[in-house]
Length: 215
Image: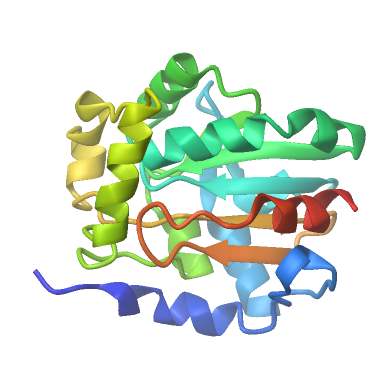
């Protein structure tokens, strides 16, 4: 299998007008094409209710984390790091959301296992990942840095959920999907910060996220 990093090329072009600014100090709007595609990208809450992903930040500001998959050890660490800042987000009126590529049942399992303090949604079709141009590929998953970070996370007590990792919804995509984080809203076309993981475990600077969402 070849690396499919270029799969996000269309998404990269669609979000070309997003202001990607360190710290998220500057704000911009995405193109009409991207807004329309996000309106059609549906995610599902833990009760199975589907909504366009852009509704998550239509009337509020939100930090939205995109997991690699619901069994991912990196994503469990990132979820904890974000949740540790939820009081600051709450004080600024900012919602904390996590989306994973997979089924509603997988999202429920993740929520129960991690006790994540924010909202959790499933994207079974990966449509939001494709619109936003997140990286996907074997070479972005198996890197020396990712291997070292896995060892570090296991030493900290984090564990991959191999049951979730090998369910059909993850295996059909090979688990090669990478994630990212955006700060968006209020307003469907307002994305003021975006981080796209270049490889598994490529965490952004938390202070940049907090500056974008809460300053």
